[in-house]
Picture 1 (cartoon, rainbow, N blue to C red):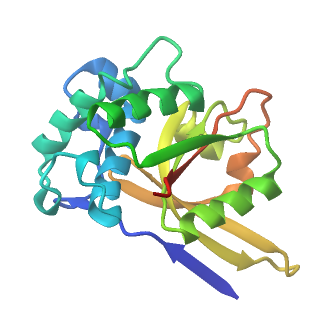
Picture 2 (picture 1 turned 60 degrees about the horizontal axis):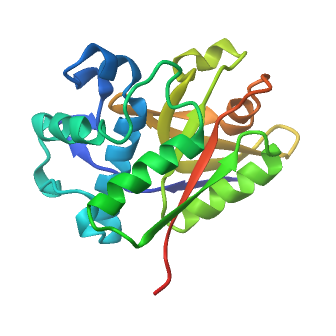
Length: 209
């Protein structure tokens, strides 16, 4: 049995979402993944959750230049730094400041630590996606070379896929969005980095009125 749950996203030309390789400065191209993730989330919140002030872009026809300008505005809140945005709490604080300055007070966020058990992580992951919220994810050092391009990297998760392995056990893959594309990653392997210091997930929700 296979179950797939994918959230809608957006395109910029043929690009699936934004791309930090487009950014104007070397440091943003190197360490702008936190800002890119925030920009993609902002566009999603406006386009699919009706949070108009989350993004000032005309979201039905976003150009590459529009997106780059937006990312360099987001840089004020989530700028590259010596060790990167290496804690979910740093990202949450920066993005919350952005939303506050835009007059958005309907969004709440909390961290789900990468040190939590995979079983619990898989539960909150499926719950968020089922409720229609993409998930900002931070992966720090990973011992598996398969995940080299995700080392010290922020990216969005906007879907999951459940398959049964040959022993009938549930296996979860996540749809990881970064650098204008997506790929399906084994979530258990992604989560269990093999290192003591880990990243984590940012769980986004809309405040009840």
